[in-house]
Length: 150
Image 1 (cartoon, rainbow, N blue to C red):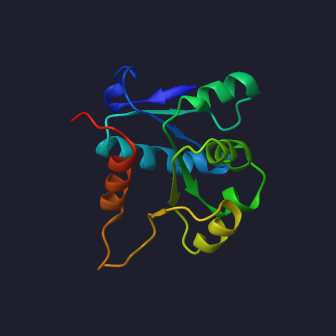
Image 2: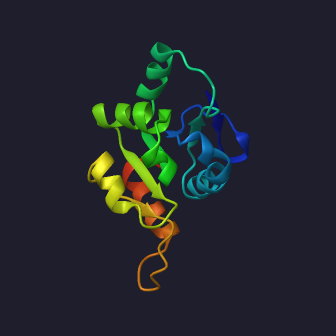
Image 3: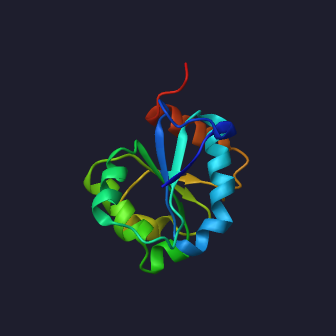
């Protein structure tokens, strides 16, 4: 596994966040979502190259150490077989790990709930000027799940 931290500092003693997604979505969403998370929390974001082969035993050991799973919700994630949904999300759900689904394509909330169950979603696509911003909702969610530097 690879990691990303603020300034590429050591991941030691930082909250462990796992970013996972459909392989087609990695290039589109990884940088933006992880930058937003690191802007709010001084954590270590772990990830794998989307097409990298895994050894299931050691992979599950790594997943066990994660404190939060982050995944962009896209049509590809919901409609095609992929490691992010079929293995990573399933592992998180089975082991009662916190999951942060980030809605990056509009109109998928009902489909996400049908496939993945009723979970709190942070919607990046919302344009409701009366609602809290994506950044505010992301910050609040991260503060409730991860222990910050304070």
